[in-house]
Amino acid sequence: MDDKQKVILDTNILMGCRDGKALLDEFCDHEVMVTLGTVRELDRLKGLDGRRGFEARNALRIIRQNSDIINVVLTEKDKEEIKESTTVDSQIINYAKVNNSKVLTNDLSMATISKSLQVPTDQYEPPADAYRKGHHTVELGAELREGISIFSLLPLLEDVRANEYIIVEEFGRQSLIYKKLPNNGGYEEIKNPIIKTKQFNDVCAKNRDPYQKCAIDALKTNQINIITGPAGSGKTFLALAAQWALVESGEISGITIFVNPIKTKNSKEVGFYKGDKNQKLLQEGIGSILASKLGDGSIETIMDYILDGTILILPVSDIRGYEVNGNRSLFITEAQNLDVELMKLALQRAEESKVVIEGDPSTQLDGWMYEGSNNGMKRAIEVFSGEELFGTVALENIYRSEIAKIADKM
Image (tube, rainbow, N blue to C red; front, top):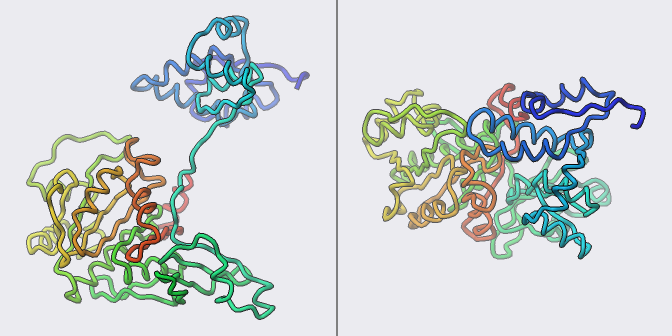
């Protein structure tokens, strides 16, 4: 590295950069550096609203994601400030140095100072998908050749809870699915479950998708289900089809839908919508969701279902004191936008109802208050998993379009 020409990036270069890869490719034969003072300046600017705050946050992201290429260096002034600093960060670092401890921080400036003083430093980013998927994959090869029964192997699997699924892959190909039954009831083989309905025709797993097979079986057999997955994986379609089949068969009289009409993250609001409560809600995301799945694709058809009582839509802001009786199903859609308290309140509305919850708590959150341990879907999965009446399935494959599949990588 000593024979490379050195280049130091100024704050305005980093803030004006949209593509960190392009910048670093341009100087791939240089030793690229930023000063700690630049990092601190960006740290001060990142809390601003508008363009400057966005640019500062983006610049810090570029530095962090390319920490193996961009070297953060200390000027003499930086060293003096570190020595004289009495901030909480400095107190933590000094304590760690004296007591031979590691500093765990996601603050880039603090991490840089810590490393400059030879204090072990690390960061922690909780996994985005830290919740139970409801299915486990087992790969078998030699065991089958040796004539070992799959049923003798299933009980050996660890941490498989009631109503969760085991997808068995023989020599790399999925062939069998087993469901663990409640109350130590053993395992049941799941073949090709079908939701029979006139509105949606007979619904079965697309392309023999094992995750959709699990979801269809869960929706047909459990009282409470949480279906998760990325956009275009079929979670809303399967959830609605399963409930509509119950409406058509007369098992329930209608579907009560709870929705949190929060605006899509990073989008601009257009002001108040005209109309009554139902008209306002149908102009939100739930309207397009229902129209695309039911009837002829028009809002007017959905309004007909609302007027005859088949569909009832309630914003979660209005549900305190409301009860969903056993003659209706409770459907919580786009449920990733409920925090723990809202999810608890929504579930407490159900009597002996069929409950279906769908959403994507990994990538479709529309507010910081629904992230991490405060996400209601994740907390509900954690609390209900293993209960006899509950099941959860995470869908993995996107079928909406090739565009949607590629866009998911963004």
